[in-house]
Image (tube, rainbow, N blue to C red; front, side, top):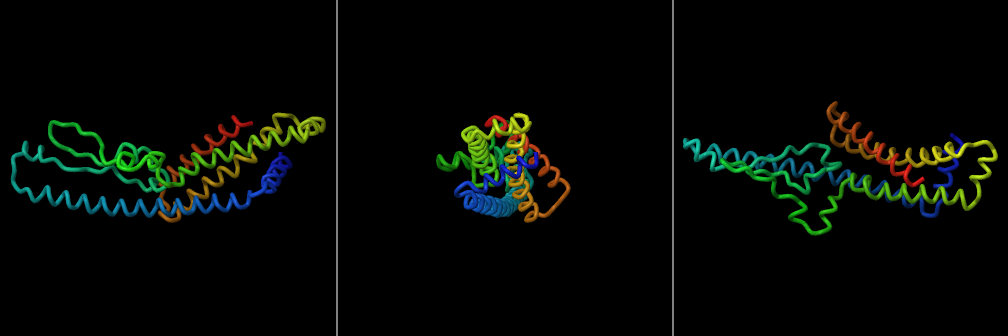
Length: 225
C-alpha cells in the first residue's frame, strides 16, 4: 500500500502545472480564510452598534402602553458565529435580520443573495466555496486521470500478475487523493483557528467539519474510481 501511495504522489507531482496549481490553491485558501475572518469582524462590529442603537431607541420611548410598545417592534440579529468566516451556511440566502412586532410573524430579511447580483447566489468568497466545489472537481479529475493512465500504460495487468489485488490498487489510489484533500481542509481550519483563537467549542465544531469533509471527499473519489 505504501509503495502505491508514494508512486501515485510522484505521478501527481510530475503532472505538468501541478506545482503551480498547488501554490495557487494554497494562496486562494489562505486569502479566503483571511477575507472571511475580516468580514466576520466587520459584521460583528456593525451588528453590535446596531443592537446598541436599537436598545437606545426602545428605552427612549419612555412609559407606554404594552400593546402599543409591542406594535412598535424592534430588530434582532441571528448570532454571527466565528465559523461563518469559514462557511456562512444558509445565512447568505435566508438572511440574518428579523423584525419582531406584535400579532405578526415576519421572516428573515436582508439576505445577501436577494440584494446582490446573480453571481452572489453561488456563495461568498469563503474557504468552503473552494473546498466544496473546486477541490472536489480536482479530485475527480485526478482520480479519473490516474485510473485511465494505469489502463493505457497496461500497468494494472502487470500489478495483478505480481500478486497485487485490484481492490488494493483502487484503495491505494483512493488514499493517495483523499490524504491531500483532507490536509487542505485541516490546513484551512488551522489557519482560521489560529486567527480566531482556540477554544473548546470552536475546536469541537471544527472537528465535525473536518469529519464531514473527509466523508464527502471519500465518496467523491470512490465514485470517480
